[in-house]
Length: 154
Image (cartoon, rainbow, N blue to C red):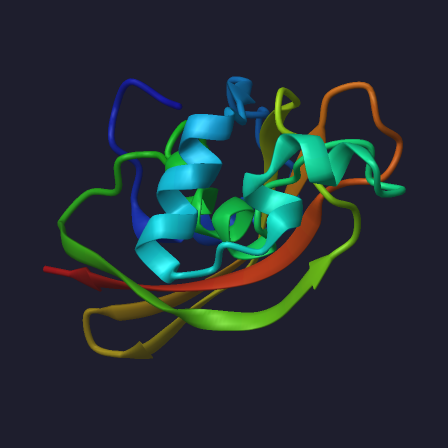
């Protein structure tokens, strides 16, 4: 992250250049259990360590949507302050692929690259990014997503 705010056009010029990865985050059973409670998804592969250990997964795993829900926190490390931004809004996702389960006790981090930054109307910029969530020690990522954010600029 830069110390000084950048212009939205500077961000647009950074399309195609990977940013620094985020810090690592450990996926704990407590976090998985709390997500299960919030979403009413108590499938045993997420919340029953003993039963999940007997599956090919070898233990409990995070919900795919839990991993996806952590993307805003993970990419916060990448985000630069943009001059004149009144607000940034989640605008959607163009594509999400869950490529590998995240075992409880694993650590994840994100990698991000701006794919496009387009002015849609005066003061509104749609920024598309590719976010890859890496699992420490694994060759395949947990997920790859194309995220969309709308920046409202004064």
